[in-house]
Length: 220
Image (tube, rainbow, N blue to C red):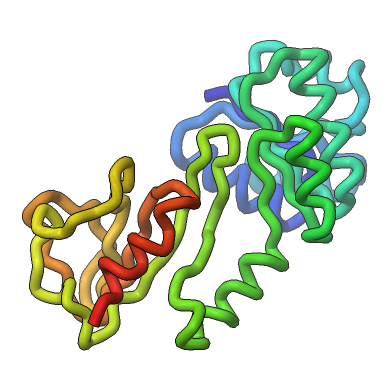
């Protein structure tokens, strides 16, 4: 995919590096010339000095052929504008925005941003994960599809322990995407994968099915 990343701070740098390693074509737009030089010294000529909120800058980058634009500056307003310009002026089909203030999430959704990522909410949910009444952690919302990416830790006394994935009565439309075990590398589960105590399960489900999924995987 051709991906435009707006914002060349730490997050933009590491995100672009990971995407490049996966074989994607990536360009970063960054206002700070010093940041651009540092990125280009490390990653090659992938960073353009400019304002990712400006139509002329995005046009110069060939944003009209981009599959995705990801805005990760430290300013929520800039991220919103960059995504809107990409979607409405260049017909970019997928936009992702970082938000620093969780209260802005509703307005981003109302204005058509496909995905928002709030580090504040992720941190809060990891704190809540330590509380027995909050055993399910939200990792990402895919709002236009009505889906949630969640993480659930399997307690030792769960009735799911020892069962194969095909033996679980998972909610309709739910998929287990990854199983993370303490002593092994993460793996994509198959129908015959056995659920073990202390496994961390990454799953894709609808918001309506979250509680049912939690009860099935953590049931005692």
